[in-house]
Picture 1 (cartoon, rainbow, N blue to C red):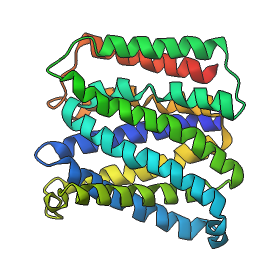
Picture 2 (picture 1 turned 90 degrees about the horizontal axis):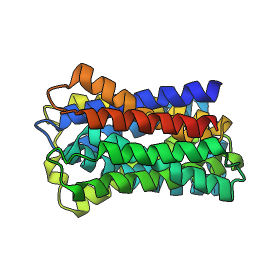
Picture 3 (picture 1 turned 120 degrees about the vertical axis):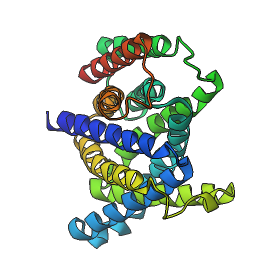
Picture 4 (picture 1 turned 30 degrees about the vertical axis):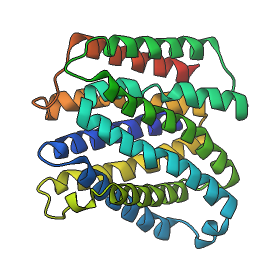
Length: 284
């Protein structure tokens, strides 16, 4: 049961990070959010690495390479897509869509990692898809084309999870996973933002920087819980439980940023159905 609690704890911290990012985007821009949060994330993970992990671990090049590939996919490119989705659609609409990632990760885990597919997993997958349809039924001033960012993030997260699980079978060091992942994410963020000419929009004088720094701290803590859960649990269990982030995000948004998020009955019902489906997949 410990991996389950770790996964749910990680989900709540990812949701808290989303709230801080969403709050920071009000009057700022997503480029600053990505840069500042990833810097804090990387620095935090390197500190933990030097304190807790033998330096010799980093010489296991095969495992490090696998962790790097997973990190490039998610949170690397996935985080960029997710932040863009948060800016365009908000937390309430982004959450249900990104919650589809367990469909992908479970399929990969079944075919390549030898995990078993059960009736509960199938039913849970159908609930996830149904919940997304319900949540996205009303446009709510959202351009349907904007949804591609959230779907893209879901695909990358779904692929990265089983890759990371495979890497942990080569070298069981969740802290090293988090360190490599955070470093790759920072490199990708700065490279992409610089390539698009938006690095000039990032300033340490940004009035909302405190929110991005808080998001980075939450993400670091979530990384630790997430990767320890993946290390000791199955992808088909941990992946869906991590998607309870959607329901935590809804709750937190109502408590802390209600003025920024417009929610409807469809969004609430859809998100709850998605989460129920995700949990059913996990218990299966």
